[in-house]
Image (tube, rainbow over all chains, first blue to last red; front, top):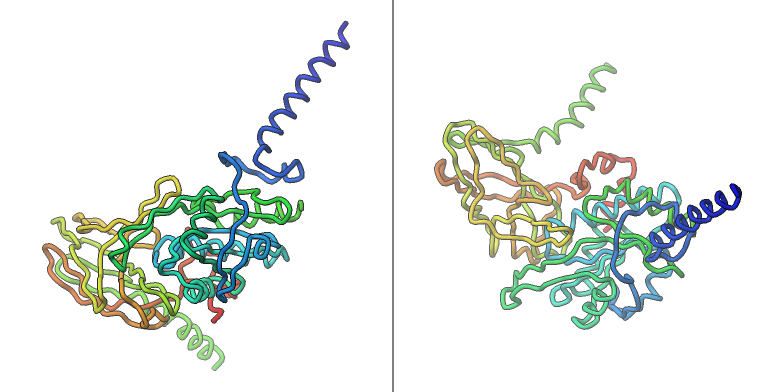
Length: 204
Length: 169
């Protein structure tokens, strides 16, 4: 009598555990990244196909530019305060990963293509990291990329050349064959990000 | 001899930092370390930062920053659960006995119209700060390297260990 009860209890615990594990990993690509911490609740799938314009003016797709682990941030270069802080933080995380021989590409996608030409995003990203890739595009291309990543932006009154743009400031870790695996917030430090990113990349 | 060389070297290393920590006084206000952070060559806007200490017993207010750019405004960055917006401020209160700091990620002087004249490290930007009670004071903002101002605690960066990501062009 006793044994079946224990077995049943065990089954509940194990299945329950699996259920929680499955739940926590619903938005991820599988159990291989289970040890890479995340308490981030993310609604819906993040990422997907996009067509944008790179720093050299070439039209590129997500398949072209996300062929290696990438840390993706959406912002605009006219933003002199917060975006540079976030990009510098991301560049610092990438530099920490470089030291550990974990290669991750920092990516900056402009959501202000009206002002951010290919040349502007090139100059901007070069200031932060030699490998930081700047992407821009048409209004439609940028909007589609933003929607794929569930980011939000709101462009101010463009009759003023110094219009501002309100936008979300999350950074997304994208892995080849897995897509989106992790989201970082402004509060996350370069060290925390480097640790998390290394965990994911090493588990690939 | 050796000691003098070391002392001289140390002095040379320390001096630029001392030079950056310049301050200005007007009435009861002390303005410390006015600076801006370098921008890319194609930048149209840049941010300026400083702190103001009110040593008196009367509240004051920074109401304007004037400089030779198309537009100069006082701004703050607002972050609501990751959605960031910049907001123009009519003024920045400087309460009696307190120090108010404009720093990256928060309040800043927003310089617009940099086209063709980016903030390069070492450039000096003359700015007139106008206070409601203390009046106007001319200060010089020195442009500093981005990597000197890594986000948050930031002490891991910009001191030679892995600062190769800063100036690539």
